[in-house]
Amino acid sequence: MWEKLVNVDRRVIYGVVFLSLSIPLIWPIGFEVAVGPETKQLYDMVNNLPEGSAVIVSMDTSPGGYGELSSGAVALLNHLASRNIRVIGMGFFDTGPSLLETAFGASDFRDKEYGVDYVNLGYLAGGETAMARVARDIVGSFPRDYRGNEVSELPVMEGITSCQDIEMIISISSGTPGVPEWIRQVGDPLGIPIATVIVAVNVPNMTPYLQAGQIIGMIPSMKGAAGYESLMGTAGLGTRGMDAQSIAHLTILALVIIGNLVYLGTKDSKTSKGGAR
Amino acid sequence: MQISTDLGVWIAAIATIGILSFAFKDNPLYRLVENVYVGVSAGHALVLGWINIRDQGIGPLIDDGDWSLLVPIALGMLLYTRFFKKISWLSRFPLAMLVGIGTGLAIRGTIGSQIVNQIKSTILPLNSINNAIIIFGTLGVLIYFFFSREHTGPLKHVSTFGRCIMMVSFGAAFGSTVMGRMALLINRLHFLYANWLGIIR
Image (cartoon, rainbow over all chains, first blue to last red; front, side, top):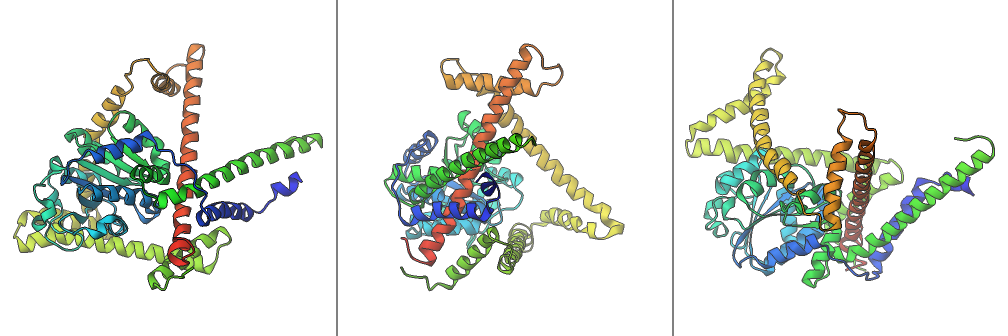
């Protein structure tokens, strides 16, 4: 039996994981969603923003990362829209602004007025150096927005010249430039609160910044999105996906245990035949 | 069940299935989608790059007569001299500027944000288990990377503790990675079931 399990086709494992994700997606179970303190902190921070104030939403990700971040980004944008917060969107990944358009279209901002309630300033090349420039001069850094409008003429930019006029910066981040660069160039030098919607693989790297207060809140991957949706009393992709995620994690845990048992079983049988590995 | 009639959704669905099919076996659809992705990404980056040069450089230079922009434009063009062997040395000047400015900005921020502030955040009262883990964990890991003295006696125990802390951190990183990859797959499956096939809302 051990030999059969050792030689099991990897595609069987892919199939099991695929089913463990698909079945709960089609027939949801309704597991309870736990809200992390870092997500609650961000939710409270947005709730305390004055109506009409402005935040920067920086789409610092590529399509590969956006798949994981979309649920959190949309939940956060919905919250900002409900609080009538002005959103100044931008991107330091070349694909960022087009993904930001997708996120605006999927959120409640689709019912708001472009140029008045929100704007997509587009892409600025230069990574961290570009962020340092944006910190000093937003309109000068983006003379025209993603849709070709003169940024200085947009009502949404009224009273905004530099990052000093911004209440908070939210980096929807999956790589570099991302959160550490925002902290280095804007967060710490100017004292602007930084928050992030972040891919799970980067969560351990961001935790020290959170603990040091350099990040004021975080939506980690789909789990964070589900928590944020639960705080808002809505059920989006984050909530729907968590059933599938929980079942998939249990499946992977079972596969890890079976894999170790098989390893120990084959090790014993080989040792008893006189051929220690 | 209501299958989408949107051409864009169909293209995205076929591309998704094409990429996922690699898990079963390498196949022509996978290679086609992969090549299309690389091509589209390169084209997109090129267009966005041009828009940046147009809006930040050429536009203000011609429309507003801002002649000072000739300096960065000239420096940018010098980067391309690397394609001509005889004058390729000229590309070193803009490259040196890029490296110098980038490094200067990063170091200025790194010292404050990633050294001073991070050290400050580990100076905590020993009044909770969390604080104790942060303080002793940081010290243990730092001792683990202290190579000026052989790790024997008490140093060995502290260093072993530091290694254990790092292993916990690697485990958390691995667990997070699995969670992230599953979230990605869930997003694509949700797209296939909801937007394409219409079997879920």
